[in-house]
Amino acid sequence: MDRTELTPRARNEHAQAPDATAATSTSRFVQHVTPAGRDVRYDAASGEVALPVSVHFRDGSTVRTDLLLEPSQVLVFGMQVERAIQLREKARGAT
Image (cartoon, rainbow, N blue to C red):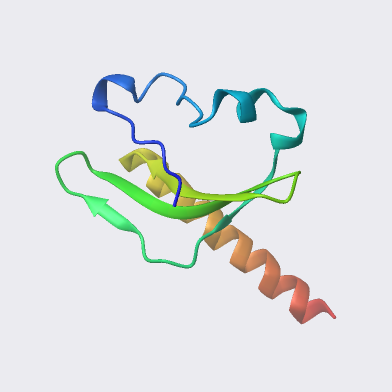
């Protein structure tokens, strides 16, 4: 599993791609990101949540990594997911 580890000092900086050549190739643009189907991890010291995700590139390759969420982002993300569930249920009831 390819993963870019960020030190606390580097969290506000852009993560470096593992392969600089791949990062500059137009075929390596991200197409979409999906949950990786594994459970989230919580870091009590920082309050961060790590959500495992798969990053899908336009060239068909996939990389697994973590979406790191700060405490306030976790709350917003939770509300957004709840809203998505409500919209889906409403749409299913309307058909």
